[in-house]
Image (tube, rainbow, N blue to C red; front, top):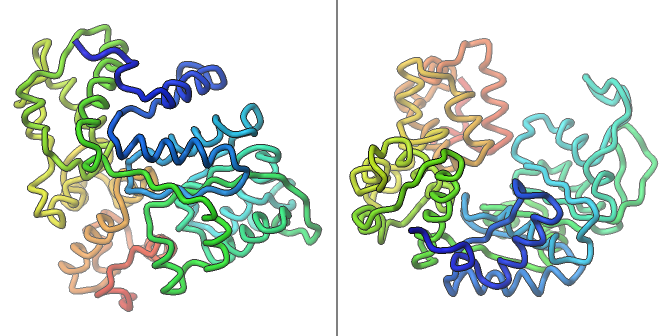
Length: 379
């Protein structure tokens, strides 16, 4: 039988889970599963940072649970009980929409602005605003954010008068912001405003047997939802021990979803999990192409077979953080290579009509997804 819930959580994580359930209910419980030294060190840092009313920058690979740490920062802070508002900065392709979402807008300030609207900074006034994928902010949005954090003032799009806000910003990114500062794509002054307190969440491969606790906890959840009784068998444990989990916690959950459905008995065995593992860890560049939304497969092959377009097979999973930037660049590069370097000719391989060329190019430019060797190509 799976271990009891208390065995999956450190004392601090148990307190965080209880606090989150009291505020958000059972569907909003923050469970930071694991007892490894690396996770414990990150939680200790979290506990100390949460009490200090300063911005926090949370870093770590995609899928490690940065949002859980952001929510835990709120739960352990003096601002608990006030607003907690979150936004994924990568989801907005249009700059005006992003700035409007953060700071609000005046009616008529841009196409589609049919009424006055307050932004997330005003909604979070007195509480915490979580900015996920903060490295995706445009230069204009970076400048506005710098003012909001530095002097506590925001200006709605289309207005000139400043509004005062009292917001604690918790930001997260899987990118190296210091490298972005060095190459001029992220403001140095904003970086230091965002990162007086820095917290790194370790990758799952650095956390010993935490993967097994996460797997058993998620399996128990699936059993409750399905009214079934299934265990993670020893052969499956042996098959998964030592696996590097490149997709981190998100990959564990996805693997268990698939194995739970495919398992014919009451024990998940190696045969149920091995086909879902990605290729040899030494072949990372090849296996990154095997990840698609909701499971495994080759996104490029899916599009080539007419099983979806670039928007559904690549863009949406990217915005949902199921594909990372390097994976998308490799998919794009593969299409360009077969199209002789022409973005327009590559549209067919991506399941897109020529009429969507500008939309496609705008998405790649905004998210900095153009492969280096094809960065100057525009046809």
